[in-house]
Each structure stands twice: as C-alpha cells, then as structure tokens.
Length: 558
Image (cartoon, rainbow, N blue to C red):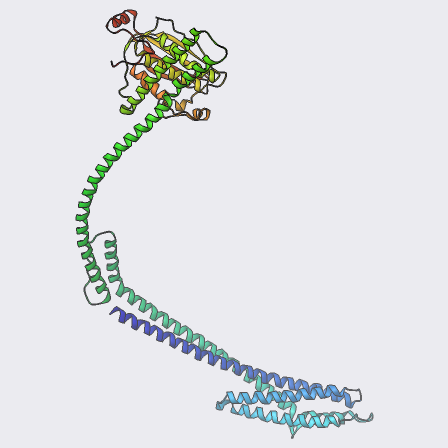
C-alpha cells in the first residue's frame, strides 16, 4: 500500500517537473524569438541611419567636386559602394523581418519598408551613373543651379523626396524597435511569472506530499524503531503491535517471529552455557590449583638458586682469600699454615651450615630456620666474623676495624653459628658497598629496657648509603636500591633479608640508619639489638647443655 502511494506521489512529481521543463523551454523559445525580432528591428533602424549619413557624405564630396575644390574619385566610389551594401543589407533584413512577423498589424509596415528600399535602390543606381560622368562646373556658374542639380540627384527619385522618405523610414524603424523591445520585456515578465508560478506549485505539491508521507509513515516507523531498539538491548519478549497487510506490518511480523525464535534459542543457549560454565569452573579450579602448586614450586626453586648464589659467595670468597694470603710470599712457619688451615676449616663449616639452611629455605621459606639457643659469648662470634670477612675487605681495599667487645662480658642466649652468620652478613654487606679506601668498624654498648639489658651492636661504614625513601624496603627479599644497583650490579638483594630473619629467630631487632640520618651522616649504620643474659643464667644453662663453638655445626635442638 505504501509502495503504491509513494509511486503515485513520485509520478506526480515527475509529471510536474516535466511540465515545468516544457513551459521553461517554450518560454525560452518565445523570449529568444522576441530578442531576435528586436535585434532585426535595431539593425534596420541602424542601416537606415547609416544610409542617410553615407548619402550626406557623398553629397558633400559631390558639392566639393562641382565647386572645383578637388575630390578623390576613390572616396566617391567607396561611399557609393557603402550605400549599395547598406541597401543590400536593408533588403535582406526586410525579408527576414517579413518572414518572421506574419501578423496583419505589421503588414503595412513591411510594404512601406519594401517600397522605400526600392526607391532608394533606384536612386542609388541612378546616382552612381550620374557621378561617373560628373564634371566640374565653370567658374561663372550660379550656385543656385548647382544646388538644384544636387537636390535633383540626391533628394529626388521618381518624383519622391528622398529626405522625407529616409526620415520616415528611420522613424518607422525606431518605433518598430521600441515595439519589439517592449514585446521582449513582456515575454521576459511572462517567463518569470510562469517559472515562479510553476515553482510555487511544485513546492506546494512537494510540501503536501512530504506532509502526507510523514503522517503516514511516522507511526509504523516509530513502532519499528522501538522494536529494533528493544531487540538490540536484548528484550526478546518485546513484540511490535502492528496489524494489517501493508509493508510495515509484514516487516513487523517478521521481526516478531525472529524475536520469538531468538528467545527460544537464547533459552537453550543459557541452559547449555550454564552446564558448560559448571564444567569449566571445575576444570579451572583444578588447573588453578595445579598452576599455583607449580608456581610455588618454581618460586621456591628460583629463591633457592638466588639464596645459594648469595650465601655461598661469602664463605667461598673467605676460603679463597685465606688461601691466597697464606700462599703469598716466602715460606712460613708450620704454625701459621696450621692457623690458616684452621680458619679455612671453620669457614668450611659455616659453608656447610649455609648449605643446610638453603635446603631448609627451599622446603619451608626460612619459616623453620634451625636455631640452637645456648649461652654464647658474642665476642667469639664477632671475632670469627671479622676473620671471615677480612679477605673480602682486603680485596676491596677497605679497612676493617677490630672487635670492640670484651671476652666474657657480652653473653647472649642464641646460636653461635647463626650469630656468626648474621654478623658476617652485616659486615659483608658493609664491605661490598664501601668505596676503596673506606673504613668499616664495629661498636657496642649496653642498653637497659623493661625486658632486661640489651647489647646494641653497630656496624658502621663510609659507603654509598641508603636513601631514606628506600629504608622501609631494605629487608625485603630481592630489593636493591638505585644507588646499590649503580655501585654493584651483581647483587641479588638477599643478604639483609636473611640477616633480618636470623635476627628475628634470636628475638633481636635490626635497624638501619639512612645517610640523611643525623646519627650517621654520609654512610650507613646497622644496629643489632640482642638481649643479654647474666653470668648466673649462663652458668645454669651450661649445666644442662654445654655451649658449642660459634663455628661448630648446628645440632637438632630448636
């Protein structure tokens, strides 16, 4: 229905446009004809004016010649030929005007024009013959006779006055020119009126058709748009309320059927998806558990490798340094070799303990670190640590200070091997991040607190320092600050983390002062606070379990 109506509307518009085009063509043809008539009338008027002017010039030449004042025959012939050509053009224009204008109102005008042209043509031919035989007048000839002769030649022909004839012809052609000009203006006005009227008619028809189409199509199109938007938003239960047999009703019925089919398929898809999601969740949980287990295993493996590379570096460096120092120079007494071998044995025992710890770390991430709590003289642990790091300090051109503790005066409850390892880590870290020519030294003092006396052992260096913004992260595993990476690219960031764990296992506190700290500007100060025990407590504990050497292997007691 809507298709048929649109077809009729478009057909009517096409017919109206065709009529407008035909009317425009007719108006253009009419205007063109009027313009041509006006141009011919203008040419006729101009030709008569030209003929009159040429005749007057030829008469002036003839007067000059008759008076004996000279005169070029070439000029005479040129003027005569111009009059002949002008008459020929007038004849052609008169015939064209007569053929274009067939109305009875202008017939007398054509007759008068032809008559004037015939008279003028005869006059010009006779004038030409006369001028060819013209001779100058004698000097005693009277002027009046010469003037009358000129009038007879130039102004009389077949008993008619040529001046009056030309004047009437010029006036007649002027009026004809004005008439044709007015006719052309009328044609243009008619054409404008016609075009404006047809344009207004076409515009009115187009507006009426657009209004009709808008009113007829708005409701069904709005309903289809709402339905399509509902389907786009997933509202498959929406139905387009449109009945009938027209095109939009057919589209609406198709969309409703499609929505119903989609709703049915969606229900089936939802059921299948729920079943599949349940299976995927079960499989995903299993894969996630397996992946987490693999990640934990891989993380432990990587941490083990990193810890091994770090923990084995210091003992092996100490062993190599001790051997190089002993073998350097001339032969030495056997006592010195025995002392060096003894130190190598002690460091080897520390290396074995470190290997056991690393294996334990791989199994439990250092949560189950073995610590044998016994009374320990911290002076001995510091001495072993200083001996173990001395070779490293020498290779780095760093001066290592002496043991500040007095033997037997600083008893703590802990593991001698672990304490040696802890202090060695702190000294190793201070030496490695010191500049050549720097100095690393220790200091210790006793502090009182509510829980009992503490020993504050401090490791000082003059190295690169640690920015205050990085201090909260220095005990994190694998953390290395910007200055540390720039000073030494091969570090792993494990030393301070392991030292912090060892301090925690002994109930101790570990603190690092930043380079901007007023306590130690320009370097790093690591403070280890260990709880002290009295000599009576140490003696009572020794009766149950004799203390072991700081370099001996760890026992099974924890």
